Amino acid sequence: MATAERQFAEARRQMVLTQLRPNKVIDEQVIDAMAALPREQFVPKAYRGVAYMDEDVAIAPGRFLMEPMVLARLLQEAEIQPSEVALVIGASTGYEVAVLARLTSTVIGLEADAALSQQAGQTLQSLGIDNVALVDGALKDGLAKQGPFNVILIAGAVPEFSPALQQQLADGGRLIGVLRAPGAPIGQTVLVKRTGDLFPQRVLFDAGTPMLPGFERPAGFVF
Image (cartoon, rainbow, N blue to C red; front, side, top):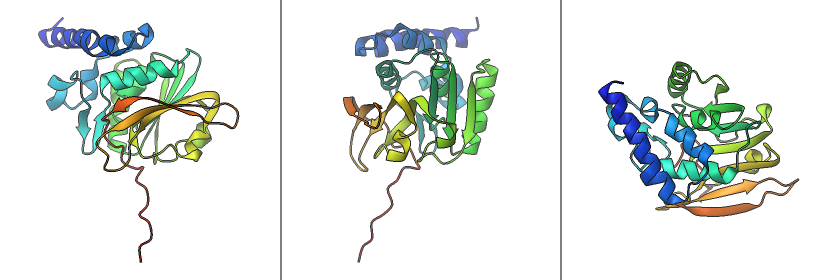
């Protein structure tokens, strides 16, 4: 193993030991998935040295990979099963898609930035991850024509979970993400679980996840 590979492997090990396990991540499947994936391959080369920091990592203007601990705890709360179908809204370079691909049977990644989507496809292919599909399109309303989904992950903070998006959950399906009011210094991770026509929400913990572009509320009419 080359020196750089050993360094990244050690960084992954430290991510598990110092970021995930001390912060209530106990799901071994989630831990194993994140310990196995080379997170550094999903960020620009100039940022690979900080790929495993306990912060959201910038990958493009206004776009970030989610902080490892936040992602891990969201996936843990979703209690993902091997036979389920998941949707990632804001697939970006494909890291969150790749983690989910190790937890369940089929993952669809929705991405509005064609360049990021292309990069994601190349990286996923190079890693032999073949149970995913990437779709180009606007993020805000999800992907109703491909639903319903057992799990929907929004890979960034948004001001609200729209009714149209929640309707794309199968009965018993879970929507996980970060709700953050525009301009607020911090948001809250939230789990929505569909039960028939009800969509109860449960707040999990605070998170400083950056806003995901494409979910801006339209400006109100002003006289």
